Length: 402
Image (cartoon, rainbow, N blue to C red; front, side, top):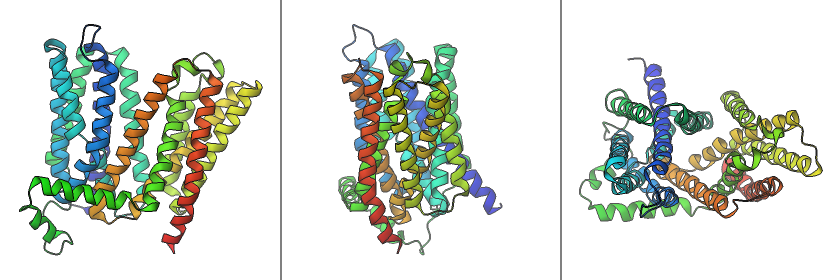
């Protein structure tokens, strides 16, 4: 079979795995609100926080194990567990919230497909145009999340649950029959061949300790740590705009903002395919554009210039810049690690993303009644903090490029 065909097929499969992971997360969180009632001993907020906390802890570990036990096997496990969690979730509507709790726990501990798929994309790309491929995966993630939210009100709950099951079963079939991992049959020339043989004789506890140490070594590198912290603050800033529906819905000038964000991100993703600049330059350009856009939006809103066309334009620029910044920042972190460490690398990234989501949820919970000006100010201050931290990343990355 043609190598290029195999490469494209593998990438499409990995993008689909990203999609189904986000679809399942959205479905589990959304369905929990329908299963839990006032008499339940657990709340919807608890379920959401529990899932995020488990992903923060276990996503790096599960993705890290895929560095040794190959992506295909790890994906089979994570997708199978995700399928099991959705089945348990469906049973919980008849058998109580205990099934729901089990579904959330196994999904958060063993169903972390996203970072493994990201690591697989890094493997397939071999470092070439990784930021464009990661941007595509984030696009697939957005479709999984927002597509689900748009479809849920329009489809009967019973039918939608079968759609989710069908999507996951298709994923399980693809990963077991179609998806090909270059490391499925390691040869003696593989740089990790001896390590993989040794791992077969190692206890689970020792493996976990080794994995934690490996994650610590990657996370403690100044460039990686600062890049992840910069991403953390920018992600919360972005979510403050994206998830503040109750704030922006009261103003006609924000009516087209969701569409503008979608168009801007799509345009940024397409541009990454053809952009040849260094990762740190592309990241800096994207973050600067996003920061300036949200600054202009905040100033205009504050002084009373609330024009729908102006806000639509600058929200497009804001999202366009973010589409350049995030994948390029991921590429900076990814490029510092060998291929056999990409699972740990993207596991840490996913952990920080889940942590940012959790912090966003806490901010939303604590500031339920908030003015639009304050919401914009929070987003602006957070992205400025991100930009200050990224300035150090930019300087340090220059030293690595020499």
